Image (cartoon, rainbow, N blue to C red):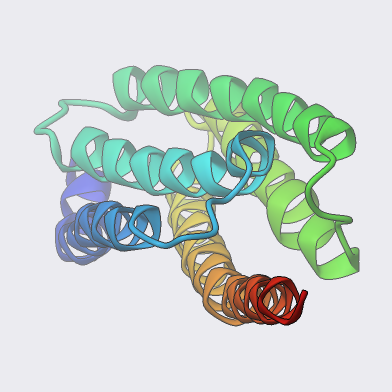
Amino acid sequence: MTELAQWDSFYLIVGGAAGALIGLQFVVLTLIAGRSVQPAADAGAAFGTPTIVHFGAVLFLAAILRAPWEEVAPAAILWGLISFSGLAYGVITIRRMRTQKSYEPEFEDWLFHALLPLAAYLTLAVSAIIAISRARECLFAVGASALLLLFIGIHNAWDAIVYHVLTNDRKTEGAERDRDNEAGESDEI
């Protein structure tokens, strides 16, 4: 279908960016894992894993929409499945954000980890439903959703890195200072 063929370059760029960012996330998490203060698993499930899921969704969307489909319907069915999976995962993420005890989410966290991803996946779902009758407009909606998920992932990855570097460095410094003070007091006794 010529409508899909016109999007080749877009999805080549967006898909490549998503794939590269997934790899970069693994590198960063490997580096963070070597730190003395470890992040809590419940916070990672609420804030870290969704970032990889969003990047993966963008990568999968790019792969679907670069395939040589004869018509938009098969692609719409697949991006519809991605959207419904994303919506379900969004609900799971919200539950995890509410139940984790390691960090008190702020408005920005709710916006980028819950509301915007749900909006992106909902846009995908609606576009999948009406893709047969309005293919051109729906492809713009899918492109906007892919970009939104990519930028959400970039924001969340950066936010997590800044949190781990700045907050955990302060926790590590405080813990080391406390140990040094305790060692000094025990030497005086």
